[in-house]
Length: 406
Ligand code: ADP
Image 1 (cartoon, helix red, strand yellow):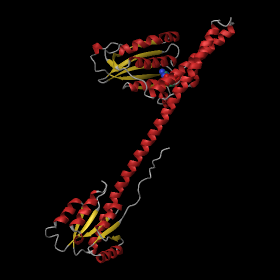
Image 2 (cartoon, helix red, strand yellow):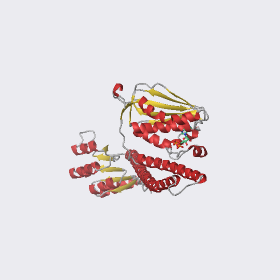
Image 3 (tube, helix red, strand yellow):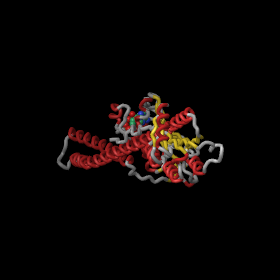
Image 4 (cartoon, helix red, strand yellow):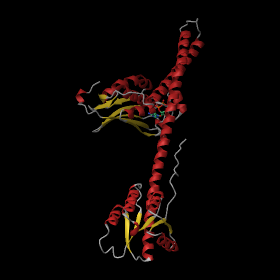
């Protein structure tokens, strides 16, 4: 369950005018006057009460200079320093007559420098004071908007963090389950394989042709299941980050040479024309075994999904920092809406087709994980009924190309 709520933003937006005057009666007069103008005012008995408003939220503070002795000024500056970064409380200081034209008292000047202070010289016209207070309140409201959007962003980030953690933990649980289940399935499957082999060898007495053919089916089903379990185990291990990579520079040509020979018999059986471009003498940085696993999967898929007498070719492209190995076929192609999905685990475009051609739907998911873990990528372009090109990209090795053989 994601606990953080997006609506944790506080909704208090204090629009109060806090008044501090030397005598309570002056304050009361000012309060009545402001309230007649539609403003909400509170008279503070002393600076402690002003600070209480600064802490708990206030729109603007109006302070008469006479109420601002040294201790009061220091206490207000200390309270302002404690404000959160978004807050810059507007303070209106009412000065004695003539003071603005003369030098400002040092105490007032210091507060004016440290805070968001407006100086008004008395006598102040009501309209001037009210207009000043209204614009101070508007500015303060904008500060509260900033506070709210900061709080919203923090809440959203927290929400995302928790959601990500939950998804990761669910994924880990799924992978652990897959790894455990695959492991548990392998043991009885090996027993099925072993005992059927014994029967096939006649260890338990002679068998007739019908029995031999039934055992053949048991064994090929067992092999299929074992392949599936291997794939699931591999995938679970890669996803859980439990696979280590031994990256070293290798000529791209070397990567392909070890692999295409493995699929040659199937290609020959289907009469497929296979061509391989001359590879540029560049090195990729790769774990040789894992890169070959990716290439074998891509080439096997091409053979699987290309009809009899089709064509398969391997090409290369080298850039400053990357090298591509492209496997192109003129097979059945992949519908555009499935191009992204085929890299997801257990996704097959046509189950009926693949069930007769084998496969688990894990090959491309594993291959893309392997490619990315080596700092590369696996992408596809395809046109339905015309063919597909899978591009396996690897980082280009910085090592001198001449040294780079396996
Ligand atoms: P599998 O081959 O075991 O089904 P993969 O993950 O390797 O699983 O491939 C997923 C699916 O992508 C395949 O079932 C197929 O539908 C599609 N596919 C992969 N390669 C090709 C290809 N060269 N041509 C057409 N379809 C392909």
